Amino acid sequence: MPLTLYAGVTPLGTLTYEDMDWPRYYFRFEPNPEFETFRQILDLRGSPTATEANMTAADGLDLSVVAEDGERTRMSFIFIDGKSAVIRQGFLKHVTPPYHDQFWRVLEEEVGPETCRQQGCARLKMRLSVFCKRHHFQMVMGE
Ligand SMILES: [Zn+2]
Image 1 (tube, rainbow, N blue to C red):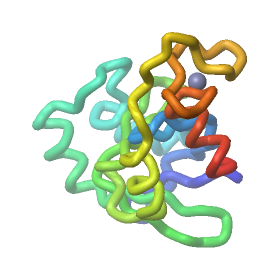
Image 2: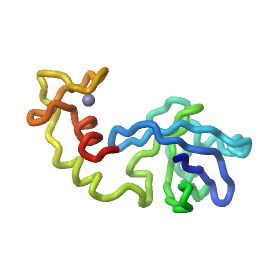
Image 3: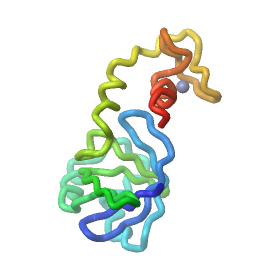
Image 4: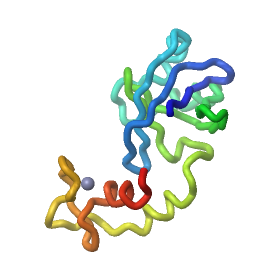
């Protein structure tokens, strides 16, 4: 179910959820023509961090995502890299349920020595699970 990214009342494009690795949520981004006006601020082209100038500029944009059911979630920043977008937990004003944070915090460290059972995952497993934190979380949460 795609989300629509807005700056104020301007729709900038659609976001389709692809994956998460807490605290990051990954989306595929399909920009509207209107996005060009905002590309300089939001499209960071692979940069892992937003500069002070990016953040200040984004503060004025009134960014939000709107789900198909009309629910709007405000956020302070979104990282866009061409067709990919990342929203960090800390940049959401309120969206993911608080139990996500709580659950993630009590997960053990990935100690191995075996790797995660999930096909293609190279991370080490937690002591009491056959999965890494990320895949254990996804399995339990069904997300
Ligand atoms: Zn894994």
